[in-house]
Length: 235
Image (cartoon, rainbow, N blue to C red; front, side, top):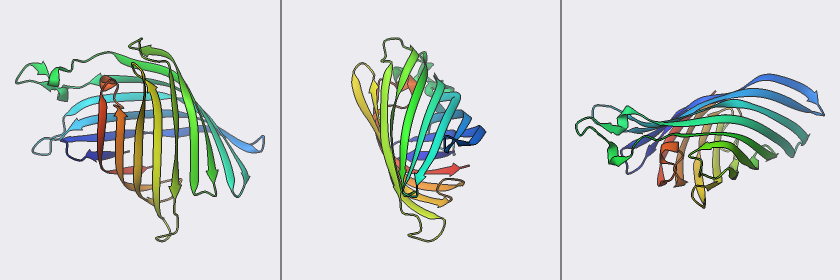
């Protein structure tokens, strides 16, 4: 749960949600197996005077996941995740200009939703570097002309203990290949410090950069590029 301030724009991004394991089995083929649920929203807000933040657009995700984790030795841990999810996107009243009785910038609300299956594999090296890659098959999407396949890969590195116990400087990068009227890449990079447990509860302060097709379904065909500071609270 957290937010990012988009530098140079009167806009913020607000993310709320979590992925929680509901069932877990240990000692499954020398590893652990878990089944869980996902609930997320990511929201675009505009900043106005008097501490007002009208909601521009919001996307909802809910679904189920299954993950398998196996520690091979002290240097390598492998994780595999299967996710089945639904996403829907919506314009909100913060995009409507009451004084003009019109939607801001002529952007009308439109139907956007997708249901997909996602598979991701990740390798964790010495508990300091994690690399991952995978893909999605979107078996239902609206608008129907959008592509049904997507790919994702990235990684993160942490220097735990450099600044003391419970302080974890890190860098991370996530890239996605999307078919939105043609293939394009969306890249999200982040540098920051996690206070607390690296793989658990804590506060994450960071600087982020994004470039690519908008994460928001209502703007899925628009190119967004921004950077700014942010803060996450991880449960």
